[in-house]
Image (cartoon, rainbow, N blue to C red; front, side, top):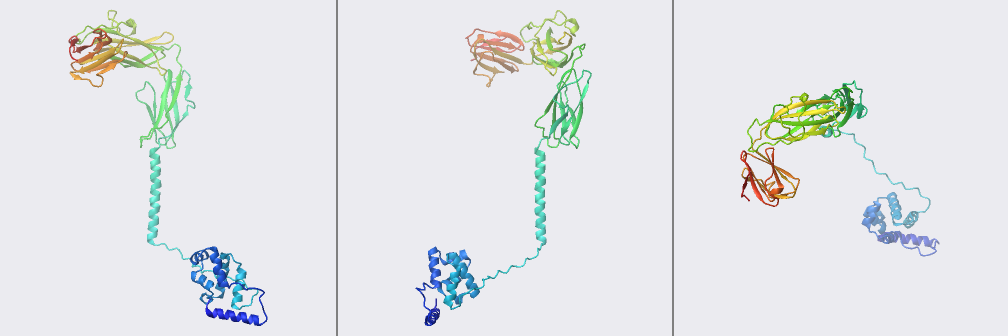
Length: 471
């Protein structure tokens, strides 16, 4: 408070007392000191008070020093005092009364102070410049491109769908007069539908329509017909994750004899080793029997006399091209036919020469069907099978004079068999000659020594096996 304000305040007080007005007690501190003391009790400085009340520091300083001339006007001063008193925890009305009293104004009902509202800046109309329009179009184009790219990636990464609508169930029995059946379902539009079935080299194929629907007529054979159905996206090569299986059973006619188809061996073929696979399909048959008969050498020997193993007797003359009663019997076997009509016989170990292999399919009621294939076996080079029997044996092998690393220098357990093929020779060092059995070019030679005795044997047909000193 300035000196002039103090003097004016003293004069006012003197006039009031001179008029006979007396205070009942100590008038207390002036308004400036009261505001400053309240702020200090609150523990804030003027800068903090400015931030909290949004009243400038110079106005707050003027209120606390009594320099009211530095304030913008009485109306604003009243508003500042009211807000500042509320902030300091004082009675705003009492503060205003004290301010009026110290200024010498008459106290009474005073109109409410309405602080002026800040002027609102008039809204400006939107103005799109060409650069803004171009930027917006580019942004929209980039967003649309990424949406398209995401959709394409999702399409290319997703395998085609597949569902079967006909038949409604996965396993179906049909009437004995049925010869074909129409499979149908849904998949992704344009997908390639493949239907594979045993006994057929190439699967059925069709393409799903734009609606996703597809159908295909498949042939049925007597017995169990199993169809493996898949879908492929031709653009991406994606294959459906869960192929479908449909099994359709066509009953056999009681009077129908078995049918037989051989896929191996092929008639008139010359094989380079004696392990001949016998495979094929049959219908209305429960078992398949394979018999082999030796027809003669026909090719150069290997230095040992062939000794075909005895097994199945020669087939009857009505079973096909029988080699005749004088042809010695060779290896054979009998196997059960699989549910889909296929069969596979363990490979026949045949020696060098010409052979007749007869396959006979037999139904449960004794009806049969037979096929005969004539083949030749001509071993190329040296084919040696080393079998360990009766006890373990340490093995070391040289093929064409070079050490066979992967299968050499280790102990082989009983029951194991190792196969070696060379152009001119195979040499074997065994730690137990009696436990090591040999089969050379399809001819079983057995063990060539005694158990527990280490020996080395050289096999170089057409010469006989020779014991060497190689270690």
